[in-house]
Image (cartoon, rainbow, N blue to C red; front, side, top):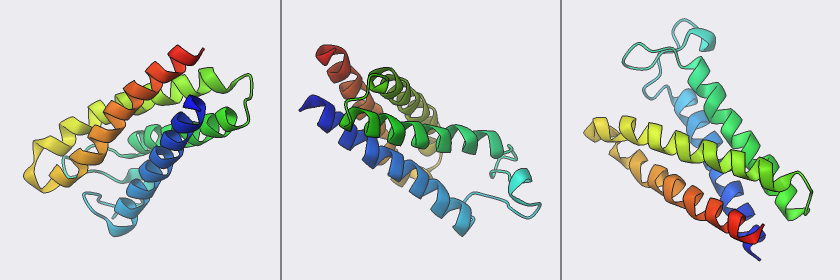
Length: 129
């Protein structure tokens, strides 16, 4: 039962991370795409490509780990743990960005869910192993 709840959280977070980033990239919110996607920059001038690799990579590994948990695959727990660790990291890192400016505060709630949910799910994985 715990694995199913963890997998559900992971699916929701994986789809949410990919969805939010895709929407922001398409809308151009906080993203300067004038030189193309490979040279896209945020409002501070930082290149976004590597950040996108980390965010989309986290989303993909969350989804893969969730599928593994639901299928009771032997590789699922380590992959899920790595994905949840990445979710925790990206949530903490992104909270700093979200809380830095009032216009970004709406992003803080889902990042808080990612932070707390990843810790709870990691605990559940450890307890069930």
